[in-house]
Image (tube, rainbow, N blue to C red; front, side):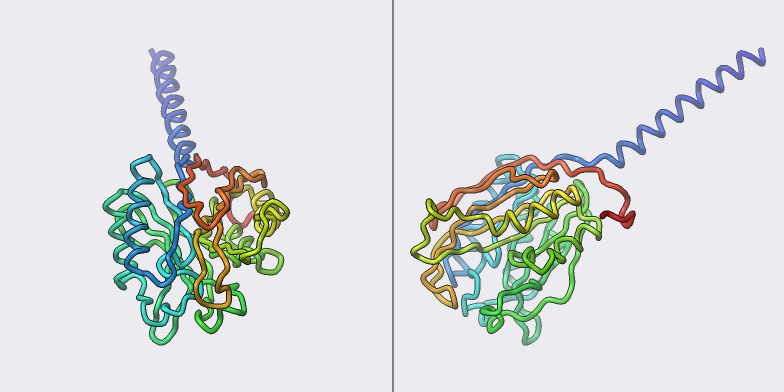
Length: 297
């Protein structure tokens, strides 16, 4: 009788252990999600039109099963457009941010995008990640802004990450990835980022020949080493369309949005050109990595 009882208890305990282990393992496993790179046409200075168009594209991405939509840098007004001084709003309470939050909520999708932010007398080139309930999870103010843009935008002073159903996501903006020794992107990895999203605005002079000089090498040099070293995904969405004001007046934003995998290799690149608007989809499965702070080399 005692032997039967002991055997029964052993079976029960073994079953409980297996069940508990499976629960723990399932919690530690990262989930796959569908990312939409929205290579959006941005009309410089036209806030109303750009927000309406962003809403259309986000809605399309959601209908196609995207879990996360990534839009370009300052997709509301265009990079360095002087209308930023009059039309920038607060985050999260300004009209622009509230409308994007509503888009995320109505379409049940996470949204990451760049918008111009006003805070007191300061104007920032900012980006946000908004969850599918319409809540701003994180705000980032661009740190490594080009010198030619400092008359429009003030300087950011911090980095951040946020937790999502698919792991921890870090946020940078365009040239942040080109900071010396890739220090900003690497810092997000040390902060535990599994995926790094980067709203961008990539532009070329009007005489640029993409056959002779294919666009993208600058970003491969910025993304490949960090993605491979830390086993993270890096995704960047750039806008398309003309630059009509500011230091790059008469240049063209040309898309070429990019995703780099945790093996440090390019997974896809969007089409090139001032009219090359597109939504590009890719499945992202974050890599389970060592606990934060264990000392990557």
